[in-house]
Amino acid sequence: MTWQQLRDLTLSGLDDAADGWVKVSHHADASAERVDAEMAGKLSKTQESESATAAIRRLQRLSRNYHYIHAECGLIRSSVNGLASELRPPQRRLKEALDDATALSYAVNEDGSIGYPAGGKNEMTGEKIPGGSAVGHNGMLAPGNNGLYPPSDKGLHTPGTGPGTPGLINPNPHHAKAQDIADRIAHALREARETDERYRQALSKLKAGPGLKVDTKTWADAAADVKAVGDAATEYLKDDIPLDKSPAARKDWWDHLTQEQREEYLAVYPDVIGNLDGIPATVRDEANRENVELLIGKLSGQDDEKSKTILEGLKGIQGKLQEASVPPMYLLGIGDEGNGRAIVSYGNPDTANNVSAYVPGLSTKLDGEFVGGSMKRAQDTALGAKEADPHSSTASIVWLGYDAPQLSPTDLAANTDVMFRENAEAGAPAYNSFMAGISATNENENPHITAIGHSYGSLTVGLAAQEKGGVPGADDIILVGSPGTDAKTADDLNVGKHHVFVGAADNDIVTKLPNHNEASGMGAGAAGGGSAGLVLGLGMGGPRRWSRWWCSRYRRGWHRRLYGSGPADGSQSDLVRNRSGEQGVRSHTLLGRRWPSCDRRWV
Image (cartoon, rainbow, N blue to C red; front, side, top):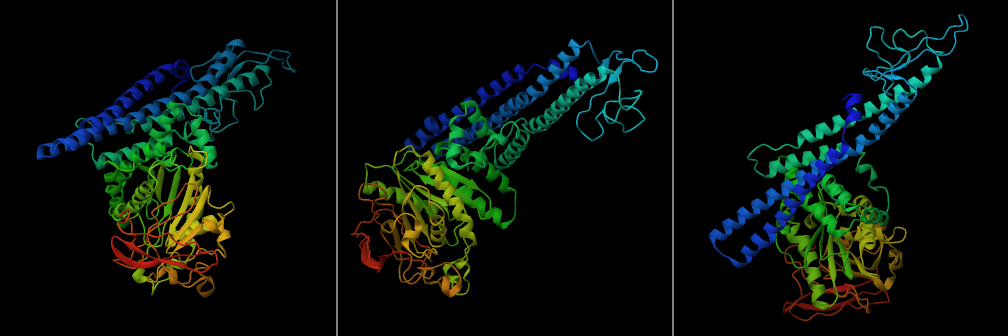
């Protein structure tokens, strides 16, 4: 790019091109929604035959094609917008420099150097000091900077002196002014060239051959496209994302963006926006639905065991996203860090009166069992809460935002990894950040929020509760199958001792692990009892402020098997609130059978 090309570049043309791409992107998005809702959705509900099944498969393929077009056109739009936006400042500075040269009657040469006239006075001869040419210094200490490496055989020399200049310091008063103009032109041109090359490389990747088939390999290429455009647009977009701010500040930032800006962030940085605490749930869900596709594409070509395991979990989540869900499913976080990350809500946490966020424990990871295990428990929690109080809205979340120890209960006798705190200590601040985001985005004046931890997850919740200010927004804390929290009293958990609920059963190994004094492990309060099963979320809100839940015997294993199949047919009883500090025990009859008792005790 020459300075003449930069001067004459019509950036409004790039803006118009970006607008054209966004229209195509919007059209593809609307078409995908129409195919899903009005065509494939209706057909699946009204027709049951081989031909209908085949038609639905073809419609789903069409929807994926539209989704891909939407994503890629969004990237092109953001690239063109970014190019135009980043070329404006250097173009403006170039034109200002050229105006100054014109005002001083200096010549601007083809190479961007500035010719200046004779001026001043030679003290020895009394004659005017000859004019000359000032070569711009673009700020780089490398070849290509004509101010340091002029096109001659003389090599490195003082910036601005140029070949044949009479001395290192030019006494002609015009020289300094000409040098300033030449330097500004060189700086503007260097910045424009760097910007142009950066976006050229990104746009060159956004090409699709004829007859493209949208499959996992295509989405792997799309993931590379997102990265390429994201790297190119760092200055244009990413640097403004408030990564180091609080969730409340992030929400305020998002609220003040234009719709066009929001669309660009979603197109270029879906992985960032989809996992950023403080961003509204519907926005995170939209970003993460694309993230799932990108991650599946990325991991499909990898052969290591970790990638295969996470890929299984991602495909399971993708399958659930394509199905109708009651309550509606929101994907609030997804990633392949560590053993995988997944945050799933059943119900919208931004509009719900009652919100619970459940942290799973031992051996939980993003794998093939995650959907049928942890996600199902979260869904059952929401369904149970809805049955208990049909007039109050509920969102039930499973939060896998940390790495739980990968240990099965049968290994506990020989391996005490579960007593180590490192994973929970890393997870506690992340959990609190997520909960602060829930508090920031919830639209109700006083939502009732419950923090739930099972197994090792109860240590994560317990440590989070003991951080300054406790778990943001939490009204109640429920710990199930807990090995302890290191809290000496329930008051240490910052919700008041009458709002801490603990469940245990005699056949659970985890709660019988050594306490802090015995093994320097997890902390006080871990003696006796055991996992009582999944909290179903009943009574998460309402004036009585109590929590009611059911327990089940673990038919396959002591600890991990949680009761999560929805409301029971038989009789249930509330956990007693034992304020004397002793265990309060009541038996439960579930589905017509009698199961081991649950306890309600303070930590």
